[in-house]
Amino acid sequence: MAPPMVLPETDSMRGRAGLRPVGIALWLSLVAASACTEAPRPLPVPRPVPSPAPACDRTTVAPAEFRFGVLASVVRSVPDLDDLGSWIGARIGIPARVEVLDRYEDLGSRMLQGTLEAAMLPPLEYIRTHDRNPCIAARLTSVVGGSVRYSSFLVARKDSRIRRLEDLRGARGAFVSPDSASGWLFAWRRLQEAGMDPWKDLAEVRFVGSHAAVIEAVLEGKSDVGATFDAAIVAAQQVGWDTASLSLVALGGRIPYDAVVVSPEVPAPLAESFLQALSVLDTTTPEGRRVLAALVHYDGFVPTDDSFYDDVRRVAESVLMDSGRTR
Image 1 (tube, rainbow, N blue to C red):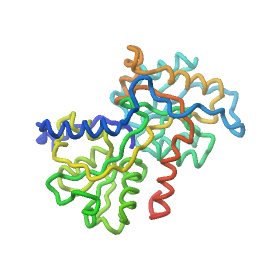
Image 2: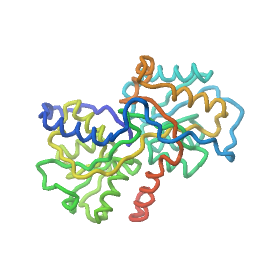
Image 3: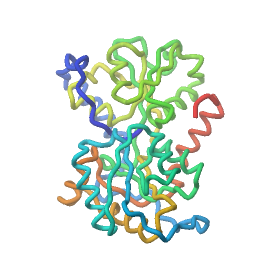
Image 4: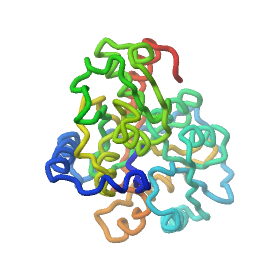
């Protein structure tokens, strides 16, 4: 997952408008249940911020511009990102710009190359990047819809034969990409826990590139089951897609939202100023709501550390151990 996105209303989907109230209630109740007790205010703090690792020596030379990378799927309005860039720049003392990247792996590779000063890394991409350079460590985690975690879903059409995990043998599966925690990793692990080898037991495994494409594939009958996450279902419902025709087959698990990381090439005082700028930004204030309006359903950012993403790491290791075919 990737985090919540705005789903486009494609021509093929416009005919699905007109949701039944029971469908809306079903999905909203599922999302409410998945949020557990993580209340919107005060913003939940998962972990205290650790001291920087002594081995991660930072340069003393400040960059001419501070580049902050985010994934395109979390952006509601690209022009409005100028407000976020201006907010950061005013508080760190140098010009700042938010760069929008389309692919998960581009965020990680740009951090490793040193061509981004900071980034908001999706959870699976975060642990991969951290594995390659431990000095790129989580310092903040995103708060979305009042929570620091979201849920992975396996969904099917109500009029299909699929009612439970055991019915998925021989089914056609749609997944987002091997870089998606909710749209692949956690759903894949849930299938393995049910005694399946998805590569062998599913009739088809397709990586379709986005949560919107997964939902569309299931709704149109191109796939029998799809892996997505809670807010994607809500976003699909909000633009008129017929989510009432979907049923929940299984929950894949709870996943931390994106990690905010800073390049080890950024001087420590500048890194701390950037992190402080994001930490005080939240939707409990009019200014926070204005600055964060460019990001879909984002409420702010709270301190964290690498251990907050240990569950993602354990699931990734477990999936690789059982299949060894995707990473």
